[in-house]
Length: 253
Image 1 (cartoon, one colour):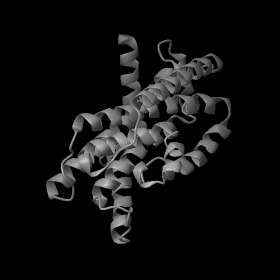
Image 2 (cartoon, one colour):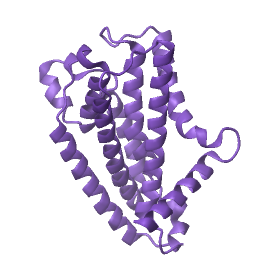
Image 3 (spheres, one colour):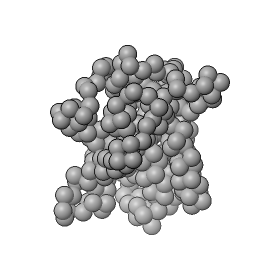
Image 4 (cartoon, one colour):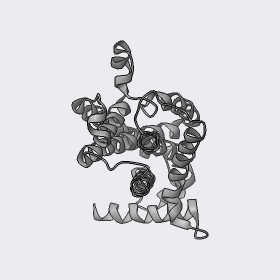
């Protein structure tokens, strides 16, 4: 574990330098990048006076929704085709395929988390958002989405090593999942016959839990902790199995 921690730490630093460089704001792009995306969407909603069909504040609704999407989607996006550009690193005995994925997943989770915390604190300070009602509930939903994104990233990353088409197909699937992920709506707003269908998607439970913790009694969240934990475990075990198989297929350059 000590060796792997040092390896992942070194890969994290390498990933940051490779992706963001030493110039301009450097490491700060880790959370400025997802923060700008969320602010851009919020700005469009505000300028167009878009409505989400309820009396919930648009700023809080957008920040909680789009931050949750970035958390799991970016993990999967960054793990796609992650082995090929780092294949030469596998020449080192202590570097394994799982380490490449873990470094990228941890970087995306850190960036999305810092972005979400910074935006929340900033907007609460300037009076555009109310303070969260239940921080422990928010933390629970965020941790679930982080584990979900990690498992999904392992699966996409390992499968993309077999075929580059997987990474291309995933981007299309991600666009389809975006409006269905709960970022644009609350499950309680949907007709009852559609609620059971949309709750099949695991990320919806995490988003509902996140918003339930933030808005408190203003919303009626629909989520199942047992279902979330089960989906996390199944996806993570599947991802670890595929990553292990990918490690046997890949040869260091």
